[in-house]
Length: 171
Image 1 (cartoon, rainbow, N blue to C red):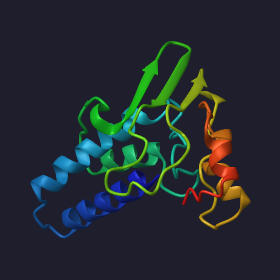
Image 2 (cartoon, rainbow, N blue to C red; image 1 turned 60 degrees about the horizontal axis):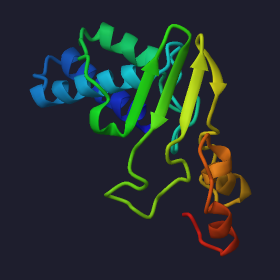
Image 3 (cartoon, rainbow, N blue to C red; image 1 turned 135 degrees about the vertical axis):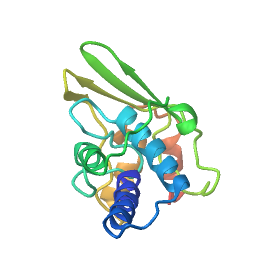
Image 4 (cartoon, rainbow, N blue to C red; image 1 turned 120 degrees about the vertical axis):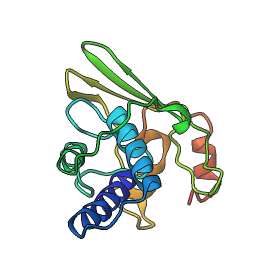
């Protein structure tokens, strides 16, 4: 979701430059192509993004909208693997599965973690089969705590009950 928001804004910068006949920075184009590749790879065949970490529906432009925008701007994206993103995607004729194999917490903000390690999201023939809740609020409330708990994810919970009962704030 955040990826889509930033990408949309970068495409707007490129569009502005084209409309005003301003040279477009090669580094910007290079980064946008990588972002497009990642988005295309991680998205499901119906255009949905996996609701992992803080992702939520109907907040950012969709994958399809962004890919159409790049066609309008005549930007061809690259075909790159997901690599170091911490996510893997498996496609078969009937199923698409996204798996989170990333480190437990980000290096740049280790205190911000979700109880979703090794989660997976599965679609069957373009329709959700195993899903994640996503994030619907940033308020400190029961819903937010639930959406960040292991119970809200397709993963295994071993220690979370102990953490929650001991009063550890996962924020």
